[in-house]
Image 1 (spheres, rainbow, N blue to C red):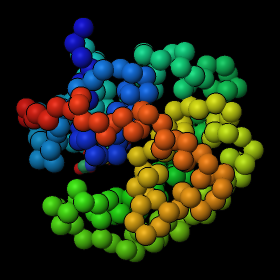
Image 2: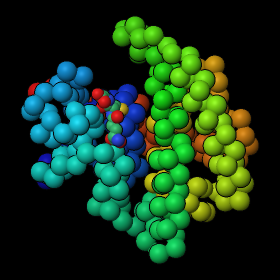
Image 3: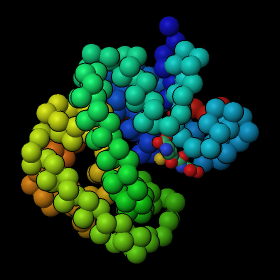
Length: 220
Ligand SMILES: N[C@@H](CCC(=O)N[C@@H](CS)C(=O)NCC(=O)O)C(=O)O
């Protein structure tokens, strides 16, 4: 069977979200790099109509939207992994946690995180300006949201209950980015910090920095 192809960029957050779950489930894959010009070409838009990364091609089945990709991967390669609980109430709590990430975390962590990314060594070649107002505004809102996270995580180990789910792992790309630079927002509160440090220590998150499976070809 052909190896699953992940079209994206190694350091791009949404690509890394999908790659982390591929590693979590131990699914071999090939990363095919798509550059900023390539992702706007008509040929690429046939695969991802919004001109964004990532998308996957799993033996002819194509899918975009990183969280949908992760759900597909669990359903296909890890239905018993527990990353998406199947029992009705546990599943509902998982969906609740996934919505928390999408609505209370991502909008602020991603905006601040993308700005803070400009400070990273690998971003220097792009010479992008840092908009401190965007960072401060979004980190201030995120800080309030993390107060609620801390309350939740004071009562249970993970955001959806006592077991790890995809909803926790969805925080990985932007949690570390939002927590970089001069701030360490994810370590300000004890319950959030405990949870966050467990996530960033997972082999699936760390494995992606081993570039042995990364192939950088562009065919668009
Ligand atoms: N909701 C999408 C967002 C994808 C997204 O924003 N991708 C970024 C990279 S992390 C991108 O392609 N940016 C370039 C652009 O939007 O032109 C997902 O989760 O896959």
